[in-house]
Length: 84
Image (cartoon, rainbow, N blue to C red; front, side):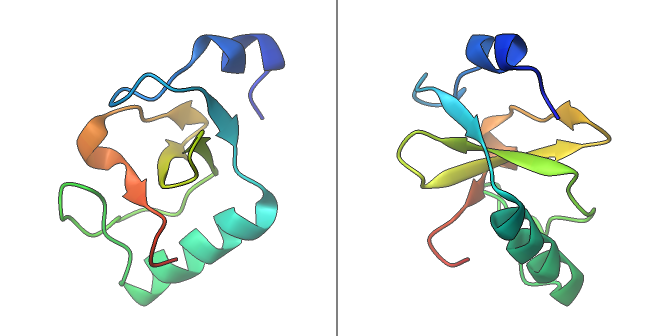
């Protein structure tokens, strides 16, 4: 879990909007899609590893993975949420 102070410093690397932590239900849906091999990131690659959590862009369209308790804030690593 990220502290509120740390989270307030983070923003989407693409459009610079605020990020919020994904709820447990969304993380469970993303992990289920990863296990099924159907989840792809913006770079078109399959997401290979279960997520510890995710940070969701303000518009709710993109999630950035948290892996090994580290937010991965790279544009191509963002996960489109339209199909989840």
